[in-house]
Image (cartoon, rainbow, N blue to C red; front, side):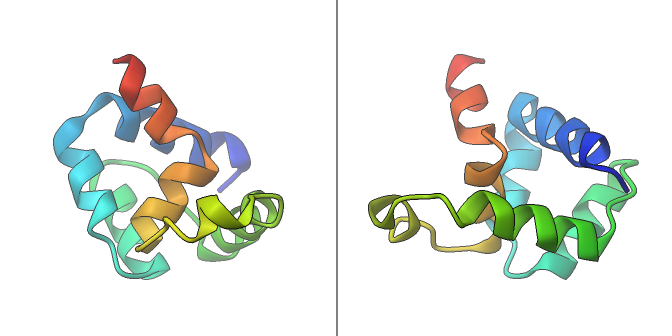
Length: 87
């Protein structure tokens, strides 16, 4: 999996409310990988974790305190919430 694959999955999440709800409810990275696989995206756990950590490392504390699940964190890290608001 490349960062481009992760971005493609996130774009799909942004465009699909049901998928966004499933991602939001994810409790761990394995859940995210499984959801992505079920929708035709091959995500690698190590790349996902590395990119996730990189994105969160620069987030301000008030943003981090609002993250309650892996799904929330993923959506924040890759701009899905912002994209979802535009849809």
